[in-house]
Image (tube, rainbow, N blue to C red; front, top):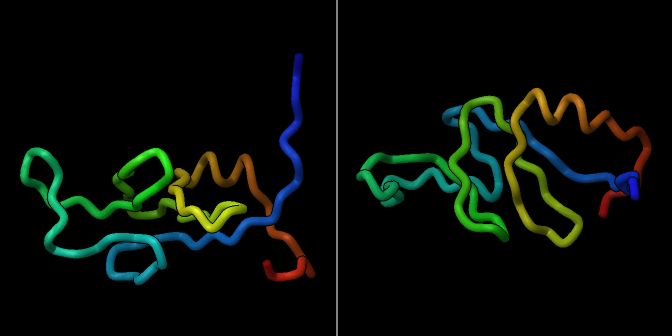
Length: 85
């Protein structure tokens, strides 16, 4: 069977170094298993490292998750005049 994703409006903000985006952990105390500092987002599936240009999406239940710019562009388009959730 094939399924089509329901049209859902999400909030998203593109992250760049030095930019404060809700849900992005940019604290000096956060290091990966190798001892390197990595900017990341805590998601329902665990911690995801993010890169400059990644989009931080707020899901339908308020969860945060990152999306690479090329995937974001293929998947999302601006929503005009949509009510704010």
